[in-house]
Image (tube, rainbow, N blue to C red; front, side):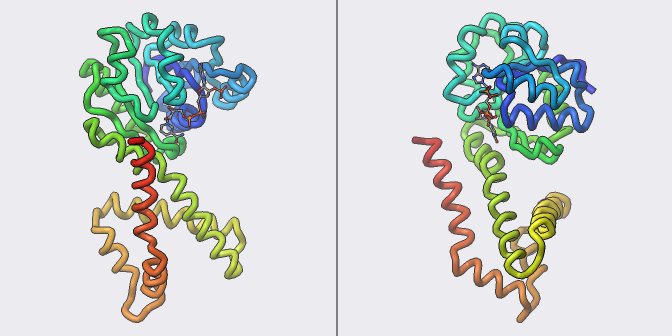
Length: 265
Ligand SMILES: NC(=O)c1ccc[n+]([C@@H]2O[C@H](COP(=O)([O-])OP(=O)(O)OC[C@H]3O[C@@H](n4cnc5c(N)ncnc54)[C@H](OP(=O)(O)O)[C@@H]3O)[C@@H](O)[C@H]2O)c1
């Protein structure tokens, strides 16, 4: 368990997923966590859910913490952080905001602030997440390795340069939405053919989790994994053909292209 006191500015979806995951695997204790958000009533409810400290404001969070996670929406970052710059100077600042990389923070934070930019995805909540970490940062070697060790308890950690942060963030951060749509679609198909919805969702979800794990453990080519399920003249290959007729892979690539275009625009 880390000794760090962890502050969170913006206790929304991703911050709750990350803190929830770290608590679940007992990498941190609720007593070590100090959070704030815009709406006090909602914050109190959310803080109570995890047993963490709800603070009056960001100043109190920073004062009580060694590490401060910035988890507000990207467009709010400048407005929220500007009045806090001098307080953040002596802390370890960890951003999870999309599009806020090291160089952009250098223009916002005070010179010499120890900071790093990351991008977690929501499965960190069940310690099966991904956290993309920018390789350019101003943490000390000890701070950096301690942070990575902490993150590794809830995620596969991928350290990348700025040119690959955007696409990696899309591939890991946006795609849980598409995976959920795939589960929903399989659920609908299962229901159409007589399964209960609960059973269909359970099967579809475990199939996705298990297939991912199979790749990570054996690292066989995804095409070979597909071939291993398709017997000659069998049932599965008929489904592969139907997916291809409907542009399955093109639809997936188009979704990622659309995300990247939106990020660039
Ligand atoms: N969701 C994801 O899967 C994901 C993945 C990777 C990265 N991210 C990044 O994580 C960040 C947060 O995203 P999210 O999805 O978690 O958004 P969210 O659920 O809307 O959370 C944003 C949080 O910021 C709080 N907030 C707003 N203004 C504030 C202020 N002035 N001071 C303190 N807190 C303030 C909000 O409080 P109220 O709720 O009270 O309004 C809310 O708790 C974004 O920068 C996003 O790019 C998200």
